[in-house]
Image 1: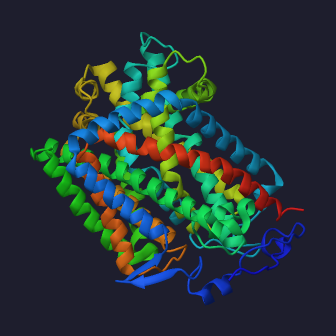
Image 2 (image 1 turned 90 degrees about the vertical axis):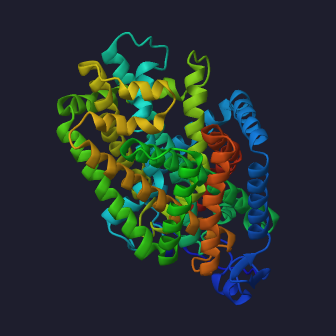
Length: 539
């Protein structure tokens, strides 16, 4: 049942005036038996909200079956689809990524940034350290491990923006700055748009924590009908395929590490077995929940990552790394404009092969990460949330890319060590991290640590993603049945296996780009909806 209810900004936002918002009363929703209406069916331990759960699960299962049966055709199709999308709609992803960054900066600089998620008296549920650990692990974990060495080296060999790479100092600076561009404020602004929209809708308007709720200030009661179903189904697809891409990359790198250390074959069978084993670990974490599972793994993740980072900083070319930090930040600031522009670019291969893939990946992850961040961010102000999401991860990425990528470049320039470059040139980026560690002391120990870190990042991404998909398909419930959580966690692993067997890295990239485009367009509408929602809490 939908009713009119008064929601006063003075009592629940920041005390600066009041406003009345027409919304759905949560108590009536609970009386109806479900957050999103009466069409809820409980069977076989599943909390089925028709049609989001049914359409999403059946479509994904059909996709997996088709890819596994027609693997060669699927691989060719994925390749063509990726090429067509990047050639035809490159400007869409470039323009929307810029728009979301601008939108976040406007929120931070205006009175809208004072709005507190949960109301004036709300206080954070987690400490700053635990909160940041979950942001870090959910948002960028596997990617930093996979691309932290390979990408700076790739851009050092082939610098963007028309640089010929003959000046090695300049090539190093531009290469690392280009990498930071892909992991910096643009990507986190995409996450922030979703986190703020969902945080306001859930904690300030009392709506279910599911993507459709962020569109309530724009669509009103229509979010409970087919438009809302469509939004949530799209969010499930994007989240599932975005996670599958990361899980596939994690399996590639774990298999490469095991082959490097122990001579285990890095075959498709090995990768499939790894996905099965690690999905099982993620399943255990999912069943334990956020407090006992996700939170503890995220904290362990961050601690282990800091240990590995500290080791590379200490035994690597410390002086070069420290000098590279300031140089790359300056280069990043100088290059962010040209790298964000898609008109008249001479380095189209760089933009389409790297930037567009990253932006699509960030978009496809945004429902998952944004919803997860919103879930753990009650009590934070909009300004605090956006400020932390833009600044803290950027600083971590600057240090990480200079430590790992900068060390690999220094090994080549100063000592002629070519193993990392050989791996990159052979299009084997999953080996680059272990090749770099080989040239440092205690290589076996640090490589083993890196494998463990990849696995834990793998698990934290899978378990937090499963909780988010579960909440979406259960209509925003945070306590959906255990069987349903297990179902989505298992399906993530199955999708990752199907994409690996049906085209490898090309298939993973194609899946991300395909789901990234519609999500990007949906988030444009979300920005306007969030703006309207926030204005009701500011006089």
